[in-house]
Length: 395
Ligand SMILES: Cc1ncc(COP(=O)(O)O)c(C=O)c1O
Image 1 (cartoon, rainbow, N blue to C red):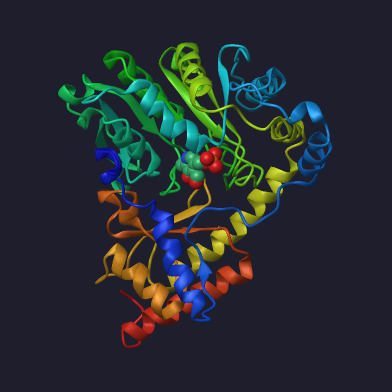
Image 2 (cartoon, protein in one colour):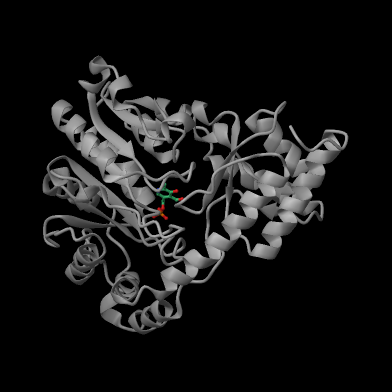
């Protein structure tokens, strides 16, 4: 038996590799602090859990759900969009439910890419954008995200010969892994570019509600004409600490929404209805749980930024997402720094090169441990760095 060529080219998912290392260290009795994967440590708000508990006893929720989502769920998404972004969406034609946004992000490449088509993918980026293209037998063209360009892709640098063969373009703000944010001017320029080359823009808004210092992330669909050429992926995972529940949605261009709905009706059978009712509770509820979450992450972020500065790494505090993206100290590569921290500080950080070539020289930390543990992690990292520098801290 031989796996497909695409599978032969597919390495284990980044965090599956890291989890193995953690499991080994833990089996040696080591207390590992995991600043690796971005999986919220805080619980789902009680009101959502209570709604789930109620819905789970209703036998009508035990059957196959609709593969595009309950109309009530899509209506709740449309109202949330209107309130949050002042964007109008038709729940019947412009929204489809997803089994978490990762599922939709991976599948849209199958719905849009033929062999030899290109997908425009940021580098560094959430790995699933390029994995989708790889599995669909298509190609990725990597758009570098660099610090000097505020981690925004430079559209003018994309060769016209590639853009002509591109069918999809992924963008993501607030950004994983860099924590960067963008303004409406950037989204407007993306719309113009995509219209010119007839490319479907896929904006990944998984972190749209996690923001600090009074910054309010935008929706791509707020850009003029965005719905003509683009869709937006959303997730309840990070907004309501619901990574295990598997629910999100795709919204925007009605042709793309229909294509994805048709695709999904053939490969999955929708989101457990009880989960959809619980999600409605979250979307229709007050924002206080989100505000509290952001206050907690902001405090942790400040500890992380201070901790990095103590290690001689100077960065600007990120305004969105729950990640801090930092350059490795002099003398290290992404991998050697992550290994050094695991072995000597027993702290997991994610090596930046796991997100693409342009992530080399960086590492990412997730703000998903409590502030005391975060402080301990940075104390340990600073000590491990000092030891390896013979007491010299400033790199
Ligand atoms: C940028 C980005 N998009 C999408 C996802 C997937 O989220 P989910 O599938 O839980 O909705 C993640 C998860 O970490 C992410 O970082």
